[in-house]
Every structure is written in C-alpha cells, then in structure tokens.
Image (tube, rainbow, N blue to C red; front, side, top):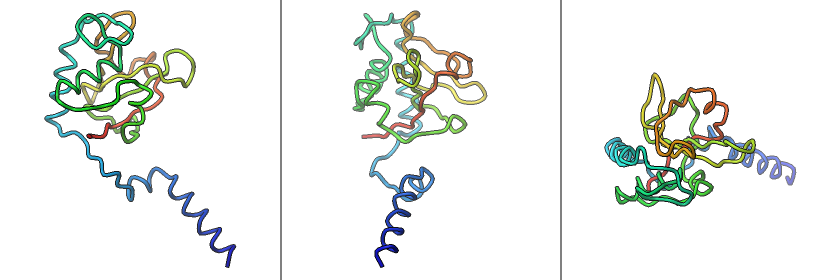
Length: 162
C-alpha cells in the first residue's frame, strides 16, 4: 500500500514538473495583455529611442533595460517588477518559435547563464525585433536573429497582467 502511494506521489511530482502539463492544467489566476495594450506599451517604449544608457535610470536623461520595460508599462498604468531578476519570474516561459509582440527576452551578455539584460519584442515574423537599452548605444531596436543576441538568450516569457 505504501509503495503504491509513494509511486503515485512521485508520478504527481514528475507530471507537475512537466511544462506541457502545467500549460494544460495550471491556472495561476493571471491573465495576459491584450493586443491593443501591447501595442500601446510598445509605442511608449519606442518614444525612448535614442535615450542614453544609465544604470537605474527610468527617464529621458538615461535608462537601463529593466527601467525601459518598467517605465513603458507604468505609462500605460500597469505595474511590473522593476529589476530584470524579478521580471524574469513574471510570466509564462515561451519558446523562441512561439514569440509574439510584447514578449520579454532575457539575455546573459556577461557571464554565461547569468541574466543581465532584457528586451521587449516589438515586431514578429519574419524578422523579430526587440527594443532594449544598450549600454553602448542607449535605447534602440535590434533584430533578435543576429548571432550575438541568439547566442545569449537565456529565457523568453509572456508577461502576466496584474
């Protein structure tokens, strides 16, 4: 009897850890942004193009990558986490082939695997673009399918709406 319960418990843990099963059965109570909300968020983000990079910045004087996302959402009356280490936990993980407008792409541009950069997807197929705050060039859009960026993707999420 105990063996059956143990096996049953292990089976539940195994199935619960499977992302496919989570997508079917897991309901977090969170919803996602509508197409019009995403377009408005992207519009706000694009207004910051050319703003120089500044660690911790969130305005026209200077902005960092997570600050760009935070400010673009705030200007649309949405609340998201401020720093990328919290932002990366704020949505459902998405595969590269399933990327849509408004998804967040997280990169490790320094140490392998350590997330230190985030961008917002602004254009879908055939060439995916994202907006981000580059330390060298400030806020700009880049193509995701450039070798530099592709090699550094750690995670892509579809953010939850609070």
